[in-house]
Image 1 (spheres, rainbow, N blue to C red):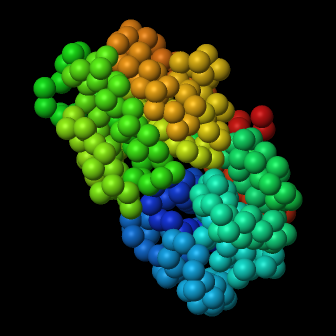
Image 2 (tube, rainbow, N blue to C red):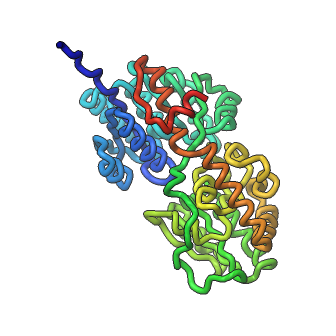
Image 3 (spheres, rainbow, N blue to C red):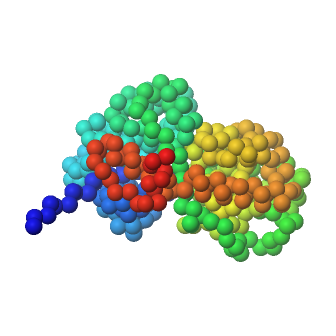
Length: 384
């Protein structure tokens, strides 16, 4: 009896620059889920830990030489990407963040299904003439994206208000709730104890993440909780500037391969960002059962259960408000425990990465016009 050959697996190309931080974690999580679902996953990026992580998962990885910011090297980056596309011949391209979205859409120009995921809009990150150019490009380039995936309704609304007319889809960020889970704190700091609580801020050391605001707020926190300690986990271009602002009780942990031990070591996690699409750090902290304080920027309210908004949200670039919220929670251990437990339940129900992967699989299915096999744990989120 003749048996028909199995349908070919869709070939998806993930294009990524930057290759660190939240963007890299999103790409790795999606690749892991898509490989499990039977897709043929290919990635193009400038190497680094993202490339190594993708290869370890079994994805096909091609080096795409590209710097983080647009500049005079852009035409060469696009030409290299055109050659790579001819070699890989993907059925769908998923471009992550502004730079990959710029080069990817210029190279593909809508000839095959293209998904662009900004991970926060490029025009938020800059000012003056550069912001105007970034906005002009996003308005123009939207015609070459079959879907623009935003991680929050706030991010989508900002794009619409800015005049970026696109076929939008909102897929909230998710985390691996099995990895980011409660556990005993590692011995990362000396002399732990209730009188010396630990505040942890995880993120790239850059203007977006607002560590400078936290460092300006920190002396006011110490007025209320004198033995509190602050740890900045991450690296980035503002490292030396931030060191000059730091009180002696502040530790710079640098870039770490695994942030879970630091979340578990924290009594409170703080993210004082100036802008976001939907930050991963608060979700990861909640996954580990830790309470958070974060600024009320794009996606922040959507990442919180409603009951936590009054306790956990502060205005951006307001050191006094940030200090007040941090000091209040450091002074109330039972409340911190309650908020951390509520946050853990919230991410389990709403921000598990398997839900995110399921929604992305459904989006790919619509664009490719084919049925994608989806792991059983993702189906509920697709049908909801």
